[in-house]
Length: 131
Image (cartoon, rainbow, N blue to C red; front, side, top):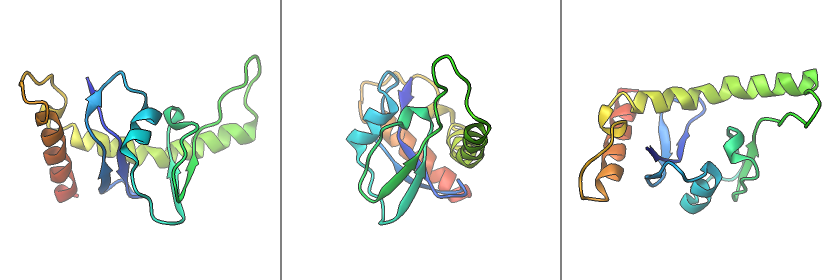
């Protein structure tokens, strides 16, 4: 299983950043730190709980509120998490649109280490072309 850092526009119709391909055991925040995607001034990001604590220049990151141990979230926190989820779904749809191309889903048995990156770049380019 491989993993990439993917950043889309607000509607999820275009992938604007694709990070390097890594083994699936790499944490999302660590992969984003290593990729160091560039953000224009005043950017706002929305990520899942894997990006809690992620800091980048020019970026204000919003992540879901974790449930406190032994307590429930307040109704306002639940509403904020739901609103964030409704915005983040566009990124998940983009990832699904890229993974329509089975070459990025199936295990690659090639000795070329750069081939997985190339396959993901091509699949992402095709997704952007279709959108």
